[in-house]
Length: 309
Length: 302
Image 1 (cartoon, one colour):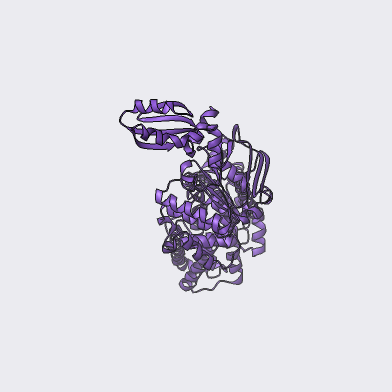
Image 2 (cartoon, rainbow over the protein chains, first blue to last red):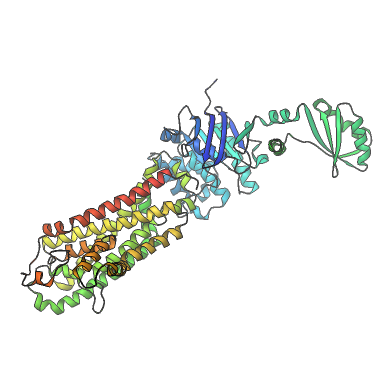
């Protein structure tokens, strides 16, 4: 197997008395989209800055493409595209001029074609010669991705790529990230606190709470691990909910039935899931709502978060 | 690379036009007025070989301001204007992390910004000197001698160094202070204290330790005054543009009694202000070094 693109071992970063990151171990494999998820202030941005050599670790080792970012920052930065949290551009320059500056800083002499192509790719070709100051948040985010791609990186790091942009913008950004992986074979590390927004693009996620990584794996794996072979189903029926609850409780494999407002929460073994709908409709209930809980990243995250407390 | 972009930014900015206009108007007005006064006294001064330099040092009628005073006054503002938000604006626009994520050295950013500011200031001052010299030639009808040109060139370089001190200072503030407005106010406050109020403060302090009017007091005043780069710069300017000036120290009337009036050659004038010159260069270097180190040690996210 390939060596990991990003590997972090025992990373600790302290700001004065505050430990932003504690004993972090993490590996990101080639060609995957890895989501670093956690609430604000969990240490996601700090971790990202150490990957770029913009912040020195207090202890621990960090390797990006086999290089130590603290020592070989320039080499790392040549191959890693970075889109910071709430990325900004020089407001007096046009999008094209901003990208041209980035190209020059990367020592790329003639980047005109590449810039035009990238602006096309992120859907900003129509606004290429508008001043960046007139861009919306979502456009800036996409311009940020184009900017990071100017140097043709093999790794992309995106800090909160979906923050403060509208749902349409989020969709566009996520589609771009998917495209980077599928068509350009890039490794992508993204951080977010809006878990449900990014869960669909992430191959694996790491849940980061107060400087510690509490769980790593694919969304399904995490869900399974937390559920411990059991699943919580939300069930909504029209009419007599109590009767429906009694019917559910009688079912084989259903351990427990709770009420949460209008919803019934059925805790059941995985293989019992398929029988629930049939049992209810068979008993004459009209099924209005049926959803599996805890495969949803938000809930996984909440439960991990609460376990910590 | 950074410098190139910064220069382009400066040249396109509104603030460049404002300071350029301010400098040009005051500079040309001062020289024009000085030209008028020189004409009045030209009859007695025909044998003055460095009449041309008088253009820069003769004050406008009824004011204490000559061209050199305007440069001394507005120059620091120029430095402050091009430096006070150099780094903090990158933070405010959130472009700093993106800039630092490019494969450049971190010091390239400060170096580039300082070099760009200095280059723009150099261009402005050179253009102004040329313009003013041209106005002078037209107005007075005299052509400067090689010696005068030499003095003007040295004056130009010294002025750029002096403004460089202020540029470095403003750059340092833009790194240490989060808000551009705070940095600008701090810089302007310092400038007010060191240039306009310095003479007053020095007089007051010297008065506390030595009898006013005495030699001791004068000596003390001079020593204290040299703590202000503005006063040091004034001394250098005076020595460079007034060849008759023989010493910067305190002179008693009996020492000057029956002295033969004459002019120092440029080399001797330079010798006179050598320590001051070295001091200005060193100060610019030290302030810039502080800015440089502060920037390298600062966290990206502050």
